[in-house]
Image: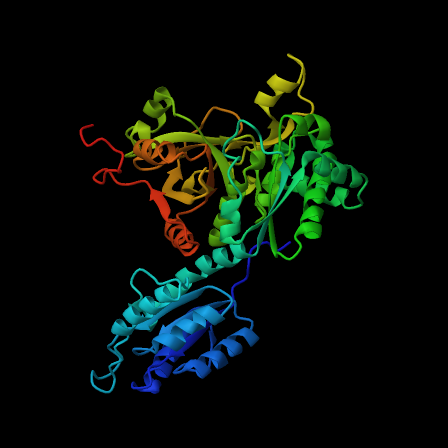
Length: 492
């Protein structure tokens, strides 16, 4: 199941009729030659509204789903902005720097034209992506285009996404009880079902002929050391097939699907296992399954999948790092203070490809205490994928709808440290610069829930641009020490 968009990018050059059209054509061709990848070169150079219609028709017939509009010279404000109005997909606007000819007949004034372009876009209330410095040479613009591709992938993915839930959303987990109004503002569809619907579908898959093949795949993924409960694999394979079939049968008019599922307390006893390992496998394929019916967690994960084209996870911002562990494993080996560190955890939903080699299917300790007889061997609380999460760069982020229906977000780049946790679940020691202040003045002050999405790499730049493109006004981040938060006491 392909669950993130493929981007076919096109470039349209525009030209103001009092400037040489050849300047835009020549500069467009230079960009195409400089770009390392597929970039459809529209042969129509837009000078007027009829050219605009011809150009949009041409790129649409070529099945482009994202566009670069290139001001090779000053550019015509009306036709160039109407491209964004008439094209069904994200559009980036960039402009040519001077330096490839004389400054009389070869001067394009696109630096000036970009100002009028942005002004006209605003008057038409059109959303478009404009890079931080949108004027450059062919090589500069080729790099801007490469940066635009993951942004376009995420925007297209969100606009064609359905979140499927199996609830109800838990009473005391306010990560999950957020208004769905924000989803509709983003263009995301949602289908809310009950756990009973899922149980009926699961039972209907009993004896499915595909189960042995999925079991074999699971066994190969886990290896002999990670496959602690081989007798559990058929149940989990049956569940995996249930979710995948539900996605295909219920995505309706949408292309892409993610899940947000109720996973406790009734789930394990009724299904006979914990769903965490299956959730991890779907996440590794770009189909995040958010725990505890966290719809904005699922959405956040999906955005990260589109941007990184890689597996992501959803974790609790869970517990502080003990001072003794910090003193032994972190202090003096890094520049992080104790308050820069924390442990992020979930029961077992992180994909195996992002965990240390000793990861294995185990049982949910907390649920075993709660649901099974004291002192008994774990039974239906088995099914978590546990171990330390592998060290490396991360981006911790979330898109959320607050109680007033407003979208807000945060982004913080950091890393997972190569420090054994000595704990249970899927867990790691995380370090984010100035995390203590960020925790207080963003996560607490702005009422974010305990779930955060994790992308494995530094993707803050692209996430920030995607949130801006989607119209999110409040994008918080971990501010450096010299930059005070609005609520931070300057006398501390």
